[in-house]
Length: 295
Image (cartoon, rainbow, N blue to C red):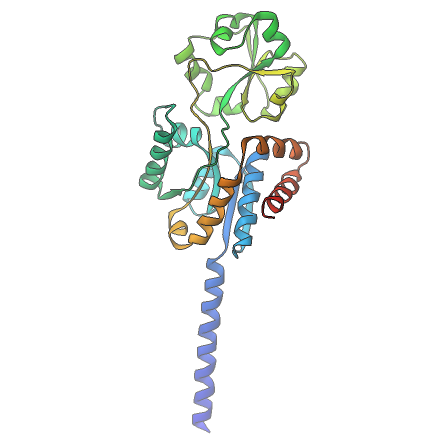
């Protein structure tokens, strides 16, 4: 009888150990995907999450993190992966000098993130979200302004709309002036990023910070000025992941790299356009795009 009880206890202990081990293993499979607080980054984050779920991982989404906070969220382990941009990584995370040699930029970021932050830079996409300055097309025609140099020479006739990102990232206008010379704007007006095109359209401002992939630049009403002095570096999207996760979970790395390889510039513009104006729109467009591509 005693032997039987001892055997039952031993079996119970073994089962308890096995179950706790399984729970631990399942818990280790959960990956927290982060995203910044704007539409495109949330779309990318959702695409990463869908790919990871398809690869068999449990996924938690943590979207809407500010650009200033998301890097620390990853370093401190509150998220495991998120979409980043090469310009932000090179200039603001690493403090390196700008370069138009993209292969050099990417390698500098990859090496720097591993050495300084113990983070893994995965494969970049072919989507270039390069910064620039936008102007109303009618203004460009009236004043003959098609380049940033021409804008600088006539800056005293225009009101510039300054967005929070330009202020936060060590005053981007000051950096621009080191290359192009001082912009003696008639006025610099602080505006919200998500209203910058409305401000431009309503002639509250005359020129604004933009991104090459902005959906509004597809319209004839707005023009992207040529960066004729090559101030802005190529700004490609890449996933950044905790190094230990990247080393332990090759399936997770492969799943996210597949997203980078499938993305195309013109598709991102369409996705942004489809999601704008709807708080949860990024989920719908990301899911539709993902499952269409996976057919």
